[in-house]
Image: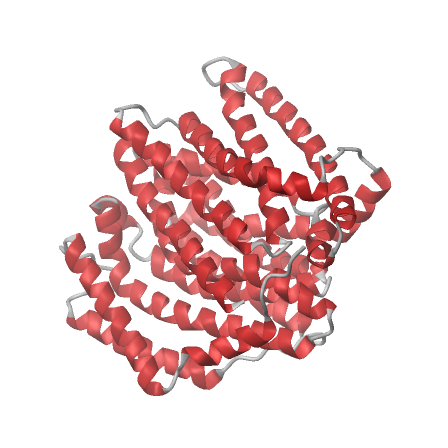
Length: 489
């Protein structure tokens, strides 16, 4: 499992790095408004996809790791596959109706086609990726996770070099292609293992699966309110250009979320397997390692973002965006700590089949987030406000998730280790201050100097951790004991 985690971290870090490369290109060649409109479209597309791809497939995703025969896997795959096909048809029809009723220019099909292509491509991609993820073929899953973002980036760069226009529709079509093309490669292997799926809807099975997974659909809606509604509200109360200013700072602040995303991709199937085999002590140790690793990375990142973020945003975008969003990144980085811990606690609820806990906790955090935005954003008209409400919402969600699960699970935090992280982060912050970085102020640094400063801060942080007694073998021992080599199917 340690090897899986290491590769997964590298892949997901590369995925999040792609986002830092992408938005400067789009903003500089198409403008902040186009980038903001693209972000809003993607937000709504992911919401529509999640509404039908989160609840009904729960039993398939939860039980596939323990299925031993091709027949069992095919039996789990079939019902949710048929349901998702039916939903793709319904969503596509709804998009066509919307395009016909809207007053935007161009033909209805020209407006609807990019959105439909994205829905079809993403559904196909997720079906293939989920199969290999929940059968613990992490090499294939990491390939499917890492290739699409960089294929999309290659498409964007190609258009820029060809002096083409980066319109919203073109960006959506290019992202759809970046999903579909890599998924074609392992499709044959999946079909050889489970056979050609027969999309037959068995409504009793679909209804039973929906009842079991409905809290996850509700959780997705609420998570959307927590993580994405701020962009829509900024667009409604401020402007698309304001979304274009907010999104880069938000993306930078949420950078550390790649670590819990790796845990969700790699650790969750292993966590399911440990619980299925009754190894509760090993499962609890695995969760503790996840929390400790999150604090190890997220605490110094949040501390450094108060000093580094304005200058980094200035390098990646422009002075106007860096000035408008200079406080967004550090606040979102603090929210990311709560969000990451909430994701890890949510994995416990998923594995214990207590999905309602996730929905209830997120409902409370989401309600607080969106109500505060609705009440205060028209008054203050600042993109900092959604960052603050995001922090409040995730803090509430984390508190309620852990409190709801305390009867079933022992969440333990290594407080001495957390203190060592804080001391090391303080040493790193002091170094950055001595190098001339100040909270909320961007300095006239060139990219090379900025990279050297960040590297020096990282070196100091881990050097202090090493001196204080933190060793990687402490994590490796738990991972090696809890996990194991991938099992042959």
